[in-house]
Each structure stands twice: as C-alpha cells, then as structure tokens.
Length: 143
Length: 332
Image 1: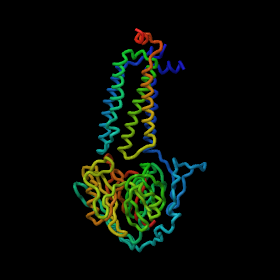
Image 2: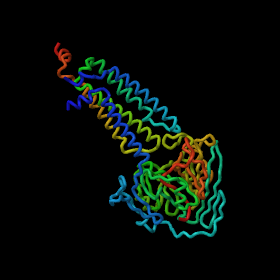
Image 3: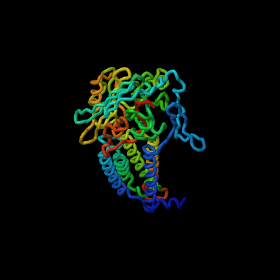
Image 4: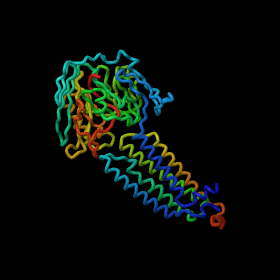
C-alpha cells in the first residue's frame, strides 16, 4: 500500500491554494511598497509568479495529462516537497526584495533559491512516478 | 520509516513543520542582516592602530574577520597627515559658526524646491582636522551609533554621517589610513593624505594602489555628483531604485582644504527632499570641483557643537538613526 492511498492531496485544492498564495503575494508586495519610500524591488514585485506559474501550470498539466494522479506512488511526499519548494522560493524572493529595498544583501539569499528549486524539482520528479501496485495504471499500459 | 511516512502522511503536518522552519530561517536572515552585530576589528583611537576583536578564549570573535585588513597607518607613516595638532586660541563660536586659527566653519540654512537644506562651508589650515570615526571604534557589520554620539565621543566640532559601510558587505572601506574592506564595484570617494578629493571606480583601482598613491580615507556610496566642476548626474539619476527626493548627505571640495557639506531634510510635509541633480547643482553653484553623495535617507545627520542641525527622519518617525561611521572635523 502506498502512502498515496491515504489522505491523498487533491490537485484541485492545490491549484486553489496556489491562486490564493499568488493573491497574498500581490497583497504583501503592495502593502510593503507603502513603507518603502517609493523604492521597489523586482524580486518582490514578481514574487507572485512563483505560486502562479509553478503552482498552476504544472498542476493543470498533470491534471490534464495524468488523470490518475491520485494513484502516484509518492504522491504525498511529492506534493509536500513541491509545495515546500514553492514556499521557499516565495520566501527567498521576499527576502531578496526586503534586502534590496533596504540597500543591503545577505550571504544566505542564494540558499533559499537553491533549496527552493531543489525541493520543487525533486517533488515534481516524484510526482511522475506511478504506483507499482496501481492496477489502473497497469490496465492503462496493457489494455 | 513507516512511522515517519505515516506521521507526514497526515494532512498539514509537513506543512506546519516546514512552515516553522522557513519562518525561523526568514527571521534569522533578517536579524543577521539588520540586527546582529558582527565586530571584526577594533580601532584604538586616536593612534589609528587596529586589532582583531577577540573573545574571552582569545579566538577571533569576528564573523568572517578580514585577512585583508592592512594597517597602512603603521605601514606607511610617511603618508599619514601631520597629526601635530595644536590647540588654538579661544575660538569664536555662534549657533551657526566656528572660527579659530585652524578651523573655520559656517553653516547656512537654505530652501529650494520645497526642501530645507543645510550647507556647511569648512576651511582648514591642516588636513589633520578632517577625520573619520567608526561607531564604537569597531569595524564590523551592524555596529552602530548615532552621529551625535560619535561626534561627542571624538570631540568633533562638526560631523556628518558617513557611508554606512556596515550595512553592506561590499564597497571599499579605508579610514584614517587603515584598510578594512577591499571588494566592490561602485564609484568610491578617495580623500588623499593632503585632503584632496577624487572619485575612482572600485575594481579598476585596487585598494593597494589607492593607498600607494596616498589615499587616507575611502568612502563607498555615491554616486559622484560633480567631477572637474561639471555636474555628472541627471534628473534620472538615483541611488539604487530610490525615490527622486530624499534626505541627503553629500560632501564636496571647493579648494585646497576647503570643503562644502550639504545635508537636506526630506520625507516630511515641510521638506520633500532633494534629488541628486538638485544636490549637484548646489555644489556646482558653490564652486565645488568635485562632490560625492554619502548615505542619505534616515541616516542624514549634521551635528555642530553637539547640536543636531537638520531634522533627521526615516519618514516614519523623527530622530537620529544609528549609523556605522562619521566624517568629522575637530582636534581629537
């Protein structure tokens, strides 16, 4: 029995969550801009693209191309890693923005980007691995 | 393994744990960038020798203590300005002026384009009266003190904020002949041992070569406002992506040992602040052949005889901001 059999995440709910995250990013960017004395940062301005693109596009594609996504072997782990990656990228972009607007930098900034992309990449790869015991997938392969 | 899978298989457990980790990491980076002091080198004023900051165990407590720190003050005694300062006869001091045998300072308050700014005209008999100081006499990141506190500590007659080097990890830092940082890629202001100003591009001129050529102070902020008597900024010039009008601090040279310093108010209803072009026009109009923009915004502070002349504010609350360093004039 794979972990995906229990408490499997729902792609539809994830897409909705990413939409909300995108909206939250836009809100945070604009609220922060109120206190920035007119200084803006591209990192923060485009922060919303991480959940918008990395959230919506892959999940919409997966939903369309792999309708049996709920029968992936590492579905829960894949979702967790992918979501964590996107969250890390958002936080990294926010940090970049805050530091850029303040006129400084930190040696730790690249770590957020590296960790974010790594998590997202591993999560996405895991999402593609089918459940070996998934009869539906086997049927699909040998009709 | 199954327990771990089962634990993280429950909804939101992973999200909650990772959320906590991410929040802590976020907070740590912000604290590291803005708050946590990292002392690297202590300055033994006024002899200008330096030593690494050490812990109780005798280890270097400095985070990333620079191996490149060079005590040019000791290394090149011949280039050090003559520090044989003599205390003058009783100076004549008013609210806006100071005059003795060696130092003449007059401060004018002016208004232009809805902004109040303060112009200090300073004439020295010897370059040794032009000094710089680091907050708490320590070089490092997030080592801060108000301009007025540093001025008082160093018995400065007049002081302004410097380039706030401690807020960044790049940009040349040479103070009183001691090199603290030699990486960067911006325009830097060089003050020679004879008090002459020049602007160089970091990277294209190494710190070593600058010191060999007689540099005594190097500031890294910018941009240059006036070079060879010509304004070198335009209406689109700005510090990073900053707003057009801000509180400003800038320093220029009008002649041998003759300096003009301008600090403007800004970010208030009474004073919106000066653009870099407006600032440059003021320096050029006052006969400066060279002028350079220092740290501004909430850092901008002018102190004269222990009194803050301008109205420092970061736009949210009035009051002095703590900074890393000052430029000062006096006898210490």
